Image 1: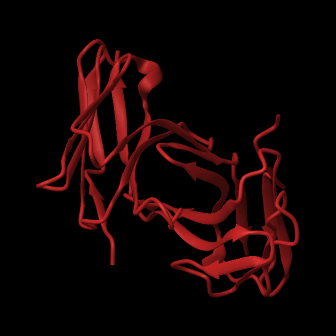
Image 2 (image 1 turned 90 degrees about the vertical axis):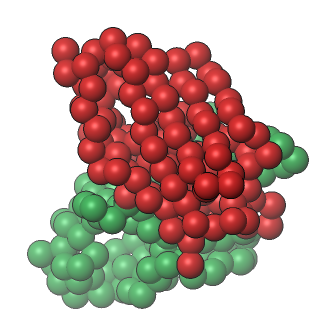
Length: 112
Length: 114
């Protein structure tokens, strides 16, 4: 079945860039997502990218997709303490299937 | 526009008890789903529905029932609670149309089974 892998922890200093990586196995993945979960809260959609795109930028967030290697990354520029959270990568086959397969999440800790 | 509303936010059950986790959305989304989140496991799909009257099983459906009598509501029933069902439960709703999509999660229900 589908599998989404992420590293579990990342620690960065405030002001530096954070890069969170994700790999997936389903070659039919059409939509790839990044969600943010703060302690005790639900999941907040940060951004998403379609499989026919290589890059998407949204303010401090940059998503890079290497479809050949099935590798997705999320770069957060000028990381702030408010960015400390768990970040989930998720994929979906898209049209005809709304189901999401999630990675286990990367806990980002920002050091002041 | 409240989005996806889950109730209750917290619940403690004794083993063998039954209960229903409520989920309601006011966005007229066709697709709704239930996930459970366990430490180190990420989110796993329990059940989903592609529209009123249609439900199907996800990755971990055992011990749970769902129904979808209206577009707005998608309750999750625990038939006989077990400690293994201690988890955080998230309801979500979504639509996809062309290159646009929406996927909204509720704030979660924290369930403890003792």
